[in-house]
Image (cartoon, rainbow, N blue to C red; front, side, top):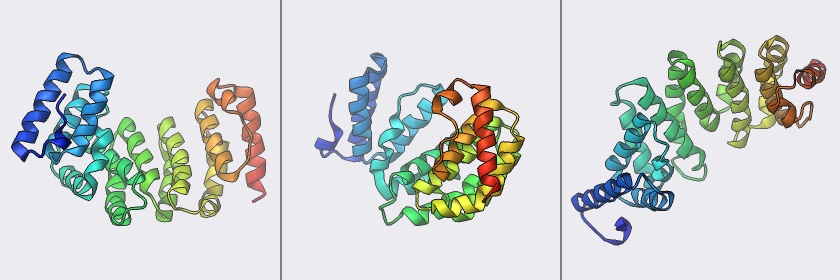
Length: 254
């Protein structure tokens, strides 16, 4: 396989090399070693448009080629490109996956100067789309919000956790509060602002598996251990109910 980064080619030649390499990969059904090298070359190239085109093609086909995993190498220019595409793409699926990709890149870019500004631009897009999308796409957007959200979004996520009619959306809303604590939002602030919502959702949750997963998020935030991962994985109702009662007693004393 030709290596684009070492050739010093003009853009039209870069596209030709990448297209040839992709065709060869497809003919061999994308063997892992060659695919991983090609992903690196996509990220090292200046042809952002072609990189995004291949990503969208893989999304549409359902093939998990992970071509997007090197898009962060395009830096600030690449993120600006993705924001522009949010205004151009047709269909909710590609738009949501593009927004998710921006959030994923930003989650790895906290040290970069552009981080805060891009997060501020992305957050209202995520919130607007969460309100409009079906449950499968909502799950992706809720996860993305956990990566880029600020303390201002704690209330939105707790309301989503309490009101969403999809069990996994409720679970991911709780999990995203944890993610926010890993991305600059004070864990103490999250705990204080969400304790009443956690108590209500744990009290009201009818889906035992969702209850167990939310319980895991709550105990992580508060540094407790009310239920084991194995109990949640096995959907052990007795142990989850015991953990739920312990958590509710704890939260009632705060």
